[in-house]
Image 1 (cartoon, rainbow, N blue to C red):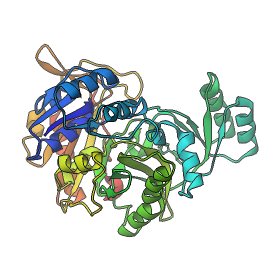
Image 2: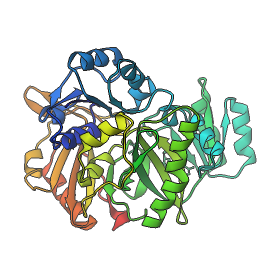
Image 3: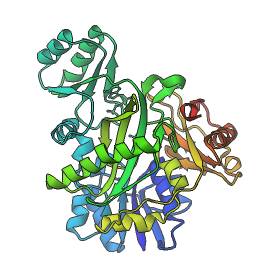
Length: 415
Ligand code: AMP
Ligand code: GLY
């Protein structure tokens, strides 16, 4: 079959890399893709938000399955347009994608269906929000109600800080959520669903902040590994029973069936999972280590989900571990530099258990250069997490570009 992957990040490179291994797949296109996908598939120069041209491309080229990577095209209704045109697509409708795009939608759904999450209140008026924090007890978690690339959350240890944050966030016409602060360890739990059947993916752990020891501002994710030790089999069972199954069923009973990936960002509080947020897509960088361990035909699996024919069964996994270390541009997650030459990828990939996924890269005058905040996802597998992490860092050492920054503690919590 012919497959189209939409997006241009490390997640999309990993999807293309995994799809490429499927005997079912004859041809893969990536729109717009990156230099990593160009090496193994055909890049199509259409922006991931250009729904009309993507649909035309899929019709003209008789694409059998389209897989949408990022959240923005989902929130704009790309999958609705594809379905209207009888094109098989893996990803939720615009309405279902609200699970990620609107925190108010997600929170109301969780409350209505008793899905464990932090207590919260939503505010449209600044003075009411300020009064709320002045009467409450810090820390406060303040969230903007919309897509913010993982950067729309401020945790305030003091009331004054919360007032400043509210003023900044609500100066335009902003709605905010003020949440109870949950203390624990985070995990990412992803599951493929066709709206009814669910195939859970192996648990993973992301590293949200830019600096070691979970310090500094939040990023899109600086590294991930799988499996995540914090998610024991008992906790995994509880996640499925109290969070994933209920949310899939809730959306179904609200007449908003969800086809795609349900990604629960969790806080494990005293051994009990609570939902911090839902995403409506594969995680980035979690997808990189997860797909490295998946022992299934991804194309077949996602096609069944897109067709509403997913069979509920446990997926097969390699009995190993994997880790992804993100190398980012100087200045990220703030203003960052671009255009630095990247060397050493070939040397890094000389080891059979290493794969370097491109994210923010570009070709310029025949050279590979940096072109985004997160540049590469250096991913490795090993018998255990220690081996995977060591292999990933050994590979990182071989890769160079000016100002490269990466965390040195990826996977540490799992060791
Ligand atoms: P979100 O975009 O909602 O996942 O939030 C981004 C990050 O903020 C999360 O990965 C957590 O580290 C942190 N966070 C969000 N909500 C809470 C909460 N209620 N309690 C503690 N930390 C939170
Ligand atoms: N790794 C965080 C995300 O994909 O949202």
